[in-house]
Image (cartoon, rainbow, N blue to C red; front, side, top):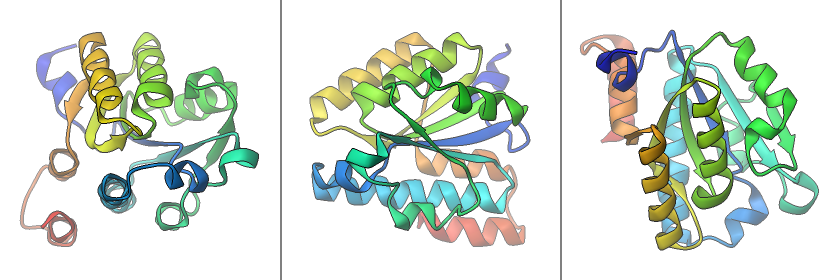
Length: 188
């Protein structure tokens, strides 16, 4: 894989995976950090919708942790929400099947908790041959140390570190369009 292919997103090759941003799990998080994650994940979802990038939600043990936050779910209401019991999304056959059915090779990842479900998912996605872009300002853990350690591990494993604004502009590719005008307002 060439350097541009690894580091630059293409809306025709990308899929957005939102991991476990669920009601009861969110209640245990630091609220100002959760607000940032929710804002940034919302921007990613709106951008995906506008640019025809498929979205997959994962939900860990819905009975105990509740569904994905409605604020996010409502931005991609037709996207599948795949329940799992394994920490890694890849431990669920339905998730891997759905991801592979998209035909996409680039996976944009956001969600929680960074050091558990996000970390294990990213490592296994890399092992499956996907090019993973980790959106650092759209992942969180209850502990900032756990979050930072997991980010370092994922980058060392081969994930591309990114941020919400970089993802949006990489997917847009060009300024001056109506789509650019609409999405650029989201990151201001």
